[in-house]
Each structure stands twice: as structure tokens, then as C-alpha cells.
Image (cartoon, rainbow, N blue to C red; front, side, top):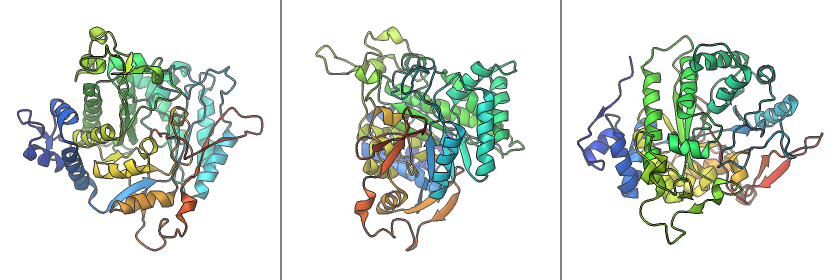
Length: 471
């Protein structure tokens, strides 16, 4: 049966109990205006109540999930110059790296040894790597690890593949499809939502220098959906954007998801966005992080510049405020929970909302399970991108299970399709086998560095600073 979007009721106040009850039941859809009103004005407890109700409609009251995977950043060489990024390097930098195939395969073997089912593989946009490098790598992975799911290559990488490889095709979608089909045939299974940042054009032009625009990002994901592949979508907020920019971002994800779900399933099934994950910007060691906070100067009066520029169409006039892009408004735990809750209510056609405990810390991540999140994401074995700009929280499987159980849910390991692999309800559950929790507090998180010929590794202690993964 073709997908039918729920009905909107634009005449109702955003906080109307009947409207929110219908949204939670999947019988009504918020307008962007209502979403913005909730984000900016609704009490936090109201957002949590109705986001949790929507989550329980979709996922029930018992299980909350996680996945065992590894985030492999195969290169930090990148043509983009995003101002929020502390990870990228130019090819000639002393700490630039590109992992060889054997080193990548060794990483996957370590993941398989702890019961991992998926690799999240993405990197900088490195013009020196030919298409054959990626094809040979995928073939090698599937030959050695045939059951390992490869969740790899974000839309900005695909757009640069088009630029680097000059594939045939009359349109961007045709060119992306040509590359994607080859990678899928070699072993690529699904696409992560990296590089989403904020879709609003004024914001994206300021912070994502050299990165694809929203239309190219969304087109790449739609091509993957046409090919029957699952993808995720992401949003990074808490920098120069206005509140309306966040709602515009969610609206575009929802609209393109409607398009994907309205198609007839192809020979490979019906591809779509399976999850949405949002997290606040991490400022340390980034050019954007050196921008002054709004309100730090006596002249900072009136509305935040991002709010002056932002609108629900994503095409605000960047000159509307002279300080736009020169001031940031960071997002703490409360703003994170508000934004996540609104995303659960706005994105009625996206199955999963992921908790961003990796940036927010384990206990805020646990609290997020009451603000619309049904999934705790990955057991963090490795992360390099956002950990370059912040601290690196790292939890093992036992701690992740305990956080879910202590929140009142049953922990369950899932796969990329959000199918349940095992439910931890017995004495052999990872958390219930622990007798000494002191051994599970400060894990060590692997991160790449410039390496010598023996591929020496830099290890960052997890207790030092948070990170994030791009699902």
C-alpha cells in the first residue's frame, strides 16, 4: 500500500493536547510552524511526555536497542574546509593518514572478535584515492567477513566521488547512481548520514566550505533509497544556526522520506531513512569554536543573529544581521533534549531516533530514552572525527546494557535494519555478568594518528573528553 502522510492541522496551537496525542499515535503531523513553536516555547516536560509517547507507539514499552560496530575513518585527508571540523588534514600535513587495506581488515577482525556486526566506514574526501581503491577494499572485506554489514560513505563523499571519478550520466543523480551501483556490487550495504550538518543554505555556506549543498546531499540519499538501501540522517546544531534552521532541516528529511516511502518497492526492496540522530556542535580545536558566544559582549543585544537570518524555508538573507556567522549559541543538555524530542514528533515517518550519549555523556544519553530516543547507538570502539573536537566518552557493551536496564527497559542488540539479534533478559546478559563495575568505567578509545611504517596507534583515554559518531 502506498505511503500516506498523516494529516496536518495548522489551525491548532502546537501544544494542543489533542493534536499531540494524535501525533503520538501517528494520526496527525506537525506543521513546521508548530514544530518551531514547540522547540522554542513548549515546557521541557511536555516535550518529553509526547516524544516518549510517540516512541512507545513505534517501539513499544519494553525494548531499547544498541548495535556493536566500529567507526572506521579510513583517511583524514579532505578537500573540504569545514569550520567545525578538527579532523581534516591536507595531504602534505605531517599527521595526514590513509589506512592501507590490511590495516582496515585488522580493525574489522578486532570488531568481529567482540561480536560486532557492522562497520561504519567514512573518511575525508581524498582526491588521491581512485575508485579501484574503494572497490578492492569492499571486495576484500566481503571475502574475509561475508556477514559484516558495511555502512559506508556519506553523501559528501559520494559527491566528491562524482568530481574525482567523472562518471557517466546526464544528471547528478545518474552520476551518483553509477558510482553507487559499483560500490554496492562490491559490498557496500547502506549509507550513513554524515555531512548533514544543517541544510539551511546561509548556514551551510558559512560552516561547510567545500562540502555539498543540501540538494546534493538529499539527492544522494534518494538514489540509495531507489536502489533499496537503508540510510540514516543526521543534524549538528548548537552553533550559528537559528531554531527555524533546525525545523527546516527536519522538514526536508521528512519530505524526502515521504518520497522514498511513496515509491513501489524495487527488486532490492524499499530503501528509506531508518534513523535520525542529532547532536550539539563540539567546539574544541575547531575554527568555528573560536567564534565568540552570543551574549559575551555588551553590544550583543536583541535576538541571536542565527534566529534573525533563519526561516522555515532555509533561504534566509545572511546579511540580515551583521554578526551572523560571527557568534555562536552552544547547546547544552536541556537544549539537546528539547531538539531530540521535537525531532521525534516532527519525523513521524522515520522509524528510529538515536541518543547521542557519545557527545552528551552516558547519563544524558540515558535520559534521552525518555525524550524520544529508542536506540543508544554503538558500543564505541573507535571514533576520530568529532573526538578531534571534543572529549571521547566510551562505553563497553555491559555499561550500555546497564544504562538501558536502569532506565527501565530491556537492552537488545540490533542490526542495521533495526531487527533484534538478541534480548538481554537473563542472567547471562552482559551487564548481569559483571561483578566489578570499576573495571568498566574508563575504557580506552582507539583513534588514528599519523603513523610510522608499523602503523603505531594513538590511544585516547575515554574519561578525558566527549566525541560523536555519525550514524
